[in-house]
Length: 361
Image (cartoon, rainbow, N blue to C red; front, side, top):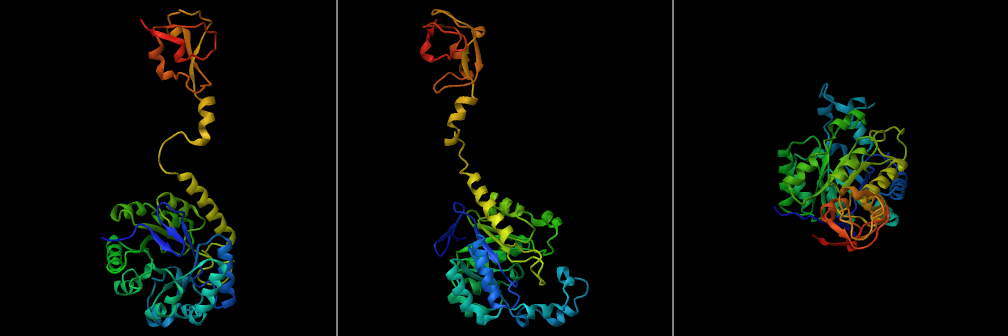
């Protein structure tokens, strides 16, 4: 199976050895206002986002009004919406006449402009303006569409919420048939923002993905409050992080409540960068900032009492105490010392050096 272990979006590298790539999903939080959408782009960039993402959908091409009106008691988080589902989708559609303006705003803010497309017309209209795509979890069972988006030859991030491994395998195969530039994202599609959702994020799926697709770029599309899940995902190897973004969690709209805001987003990015530094490379060694502590915290062999040259050393003559100057004898070398004679006079508390010792008799 052919796929890249490193993706590139513009000048940014996305790989296990690179910093996490943060996608601010503005989604429908523009509330139908172009100026507001542009402001959110700048706010996201200032908060540390690498990319801003919108969702190109039209109500008529994504939901069935009849279907939702007759769905019964299976509405999930949408049951709390104050209007029928179809009307909410109509209200928060992405106005496609904004494409150029938002792409230009993103360029001016030095942030990547991205989208999740929900129909092929959206792909045609926006393709010249984006350098990567995202496929939402809801379309993971639509391999024909996934493959057609993949054929654009750009990095594609695939969310896997509410999916089985068989669903993931099918969708991954659809991408890789035409495009090796895939980032696979664990996701949980409960959008209530409940703390109980942490029980269902299942970050260890990332470990399963790593085994199933060794070296593939992994990520997390997250809807839990705060950034605990994000930090855990990065520790497990995720290098693409997507969260919803707004300027005000109290605004009326389907996504504002569970979105990150400029303050929480900045906190998330800052803590993530600290975590990335802390993760290191996995090689156990004495680190550069520990060289002094090796001396002051370790023990070495020292004389318990004043002893003249010629003394045959036994265990009663020695003790292990801090500090341990460079090249002093650590306690684990005691057996090398016992039964040897001192070549020089030593005083109580003095460090014992290998040069102080004659050969064994």
